[in-house]
Length: 200
Picture (cartoon, rainbow, N blue to C red):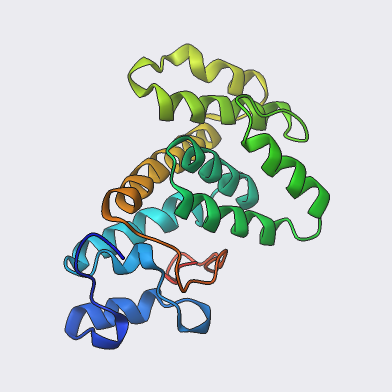
């Protein structure tokens, strides 16, 4: 049970009902991480806008499966099993044509310093995300150099930063308010459409 009152989609009215309609995923599911915002619908709108922009925007350059991998890593570091489970499932779905690579990558995300099959650039990005999560006050410009040396552009570095930062927010929303995966189907992703809000 969550730590605060939650308005279920069946009981939603007015503005909340309209927002729930926009964020309903496949099978009519409104994820529990979204329902936890029900007492303040404006924060649900903000959460969805940030989620879509950071993780599922069509103008991002980095592969979506890798952005999900960053989210899994950050969630593991923050002891947020809810987000780690959801986004591991999303990552698996996105890598369905490469199941062996998915399993190897997921195993590496549980290690202190992920290695192959992640590329050099991906490993550098994961190291940056790790430091940003565990020691944010100690990140310096030199921490970006391995990503640049491995070929990531500043725009791609921004994508890494924004995904890691989003998950810091999402993880604390979930763990701080007792959100759980009970009754949820894991790993559903929204379409890559700037105007669509549907969550997964």
